Length: 265
Image 1 (cartoon, rainbow, N blue to C red):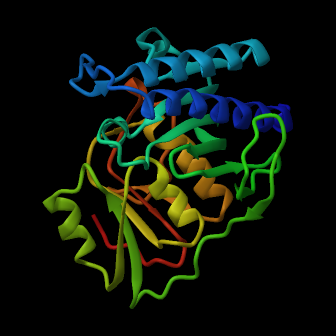
Image 2 (image 1 turned 30 degrees about the vertical axis):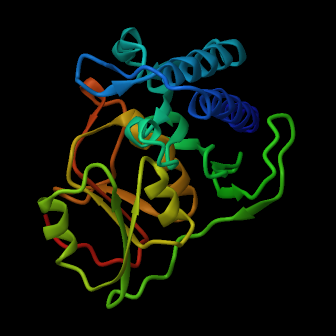
């Protein structure tokens, strides 16, 4: 597997997709449609999806692609495949809150081994390198040339004073009850897959998700977190969150720096 080429291509496609998304975001009003599951979709999702899918297929014709926006791809059963969410956080996008992301991941034997998360409206770009380690590119971001990067490593958390990050759009009482089992010093709220990246960057220690997600929502963020030394485990038994599950639906999960003593389910 040529991970160096995969990383370079995924980074470029994420930036190009981000530019296409921002053209819609900064333009006139756009229509918001409802998909079969009632989740929102816009022309920005569709343009980004088409760009990424075509780019991956051209560069890596032998690797399957599963993308949120193409239901026909959801029957893929390969053990190695790309997993794409072209615009995660469409609710944040529609409400012009800024922290939506482009997500591209490579799955190998159930594990997201490489990934890129790009938040174009706030200018943050996270990705794994060829060796699997994670960096944040600090910009400026040019599709054809990598800018300055800094290596990321998860925090060394103080269990008596944790920093917790949770969803803006999907926070509920069950999540609050679970967070209440920890000694929390500070709380951060973020949309989309940025929550994984905040843990990867050492800006938060713990991200619990007690709600429905799909694999394309989490794969790239999990790759970024794993490359920074973090973990993502199932909520019920604390085993690693894996990919390629039937229907691509995730169980509840906990993303965390290894020094966090996890509360039981």
